[in-house]
Structure formats: structure tokens, C-alpha cells
Image (tube, rainbow, N blue to C red):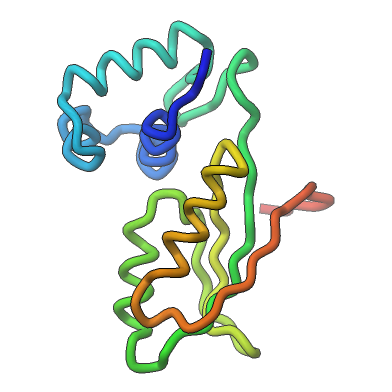
Length: 144
């Protein structure tokens, strides 16, 4: 089964809150409730969505690709930039940091093409002056 960019957006929203009502998912994605219900059913039947914490099933794609994005921000635009990043469901974490960058975001998507689009979307946010990103290849330790 081919996972579409809309499917990826839907799964990203469900990762944020798997209990989001279908009507709200439809509104956020700009499609009908029926379309969302059909997409969910197709993702479930094909084993891509295996449960609603959202866990991706063994027959579906891997958990995806993560990237760390270091972000420099115009100091007068910091609040607006943070709000814009918080509206992006693919942004899993957002930290203020000291050093040459102001923020560090961790983003997740299913494919490198989708990560590329997310990085482009971040780069054009008004108030962001510079970004630098790195794809996470593997996790050697996670104590969370």
C-alpha cells in the first residue's frame, strides 16, 4: 500500500492526540469527515495503524525519520515563530537553548521527501533567520 502525504499528515496529527475527533481531523486537513474515516479504515486494514496511541503496524512503514533542526530567530519575532512551530504536528519537541541557535526542534515524518518539505516549511516561517538540520540515524540511549 502506498502511504500518501495526506496519510502522513493524518498520522502526525494522531501522534499529537490519537483521540482527536474525526470532524476536527477533517477540518485541520481540509477534507470531509467521510474522507478521514475512509483513510483511517484503509490504514487500519492494511496494518499501518495498529492501535490508537498511534502505533504503526508491522506491515506499515517504520516509525519514520527524525531530524533535529537548529533555528536562529529574529529576537522580535520569537513568540510568533514558537507559535508557528507549535501548530506544525510534525514538530515533536521544541526547546529554547543557549548558544549560536535560539531553538532546537525535533521533527518526524515517514519519508525523507516529507522531512524535506517540513524543513522547507520551517525555513519560510517569518522571523526565522537561519536553520541547520541533521537526520537522526540511530538512537544509542533514550532514558525517557
